[in-house]
Length: 245
Picture 1 (tube, helix red, strand yellow):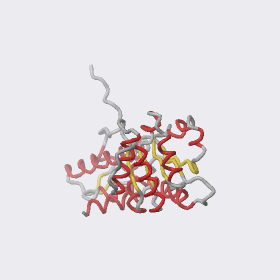
Picture 2 (cartoon, rainbow, N blue to C red):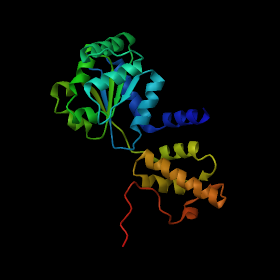
Picture 3 (cartoon, one colour):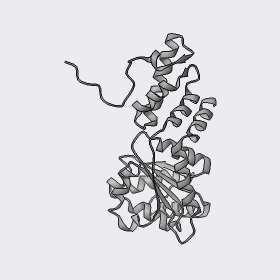
Picture 4 (cartoon, rainbow, N blue to C red):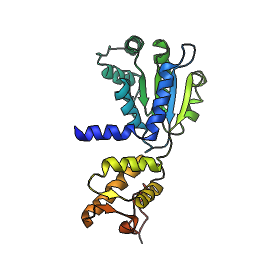
């Protein structure tokens, strides 16, 4: 339980959570004559999914994550499962269920990995949900190319209220993550700056490297580890190792 609480507090303090929260606020509080769909996009590893999961919990939104196998039917089934509603047998009936629940609950729908739906040309089902629920607020999350991909669907693209781009992790994010996850050894500012540089904006790479650094400190019996202590050891960059020989 303590670990879960720590992770939630950490995620809440990161910059991209604030960006996503502002976008979600716009979607849920926009006047009735404006669209209520927002898009949150950015490179893999920038913490978009973690931010969305936190917001779903914090604001009671329905959160689903698409996969390469997601179809119109399976998307509706996932949403209904999140809603705790037994799914009807047909796609049309399930669509009506989802729309009715969204409209009457007033809760936001967050669809993660939206790229999969775009790549399979099943964006229309999301538009059907939006229109059928009388414009219930939605947040769509995907890779940095998602805004460009959605231009293909002009009618849907025109219903987007806000386009928010996830930002690379800054040094403050790195320090925040270290303060929560490196509880057995402190990492000096110069080494945190090095971790920030190597991570190239990826929250995921930051977390991997913080763990590597802390383990090194514990191995050496250090209560605080500096860049000099770390030396020339490699950090995780996400790149495949170079071929030998």
